[in-house]
Image (cartoon, rainbow, N blue to C red):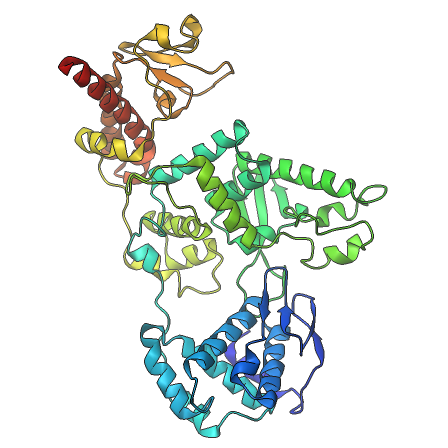
Length: 511
């Protein structure tokens, strides 16, 4: 819905529009006069502050206008409007509310956040159009003449912020391999693993992931897809529009395991099990404890009532970060893992591949291209030529090597087992401490594995030289830095081993 359509809707409303209670766009019943409004599973806010800033009549009018937004727009948009008006009122204490003087004073305080006035102007416009009193006519006339700056977009991307911006290929590789390793050894539950891998491989918003149902996992002509509900649509209803996103089999199998656990979860709580026709409607990520046997499952499945809150994904990523502990080669500290970073990474990688704004906007599920342009205007370039000197310098920061260095084979776990020995073209480099089967390519893949036990005198520098040489050859043949950088984290892991071996030998010489 465009702005003009919104105005048309407002003009069609009875000028004496009022409601004692209403149903939010997401299906939640709200008493207009209540202090707490719950508009969806993700949006609840308190209105007790109104009496401190507005008269009884003005507060009543404000509630009615906000109720209109809650019924016609997304719950998040209604909440954001509420917060913007609240901020304005707090900064206008001692002035006549909504007077031209108070608005001018507020504008002066906003500085680089002038864009907030756009939402306030729209809210006041709706207030007047519906027919409520309290907004001076000269205030809206003045604001309609203003040209309000938009908010700054893409700072984290443009600045290549190592804390909140796009992830480098080395960081992303470390996160994906670290998550899978922690899941395999029981440090991460299936649900948290699915959250992390879905973010990493699709760049979707948390609200899109928690809105998924089992039926959204599709197979079309042997290819795997997730049918994601559109997110951040101001005027669109929940799960009213979708976009297919192709995924790899590994993620598909993880989500199938999650779907299986969800079916078991609900079958334990529904007498006689969940009816077959309702199984596809079950949330892929249900809110724990949200359903009891006394409630109508079919009615609840029609809305978002049984779906996990979007905030759960941010909490899950904080937990995943604490378990995986991937070290950034840029900062030398644990890589920050918030959901936005994965979206920024997807957009950045597409821009590096030469994709245009429209392709990026579609991939990121944007309604238009105004936010996609930030990726192509000044493409952040993380992939740089890594030579041996750079690799040895970055290695201590990245800490990509996750195994244990041993003096010789006799000190290694399974050192007496010849089948555990790992060799290169120059001879043995170490032992594998795992008793399970491994199909990874030895010896290069071993350097980022926690089971690897490299020997102090192993030919690790020769392995490093080979990797650097292969990287240079690929870059020369393809002229594609991204393809050439596929083993960069592995190069840093081997470099880390080389550095550690040199340090230990140096100490023994000086003793």
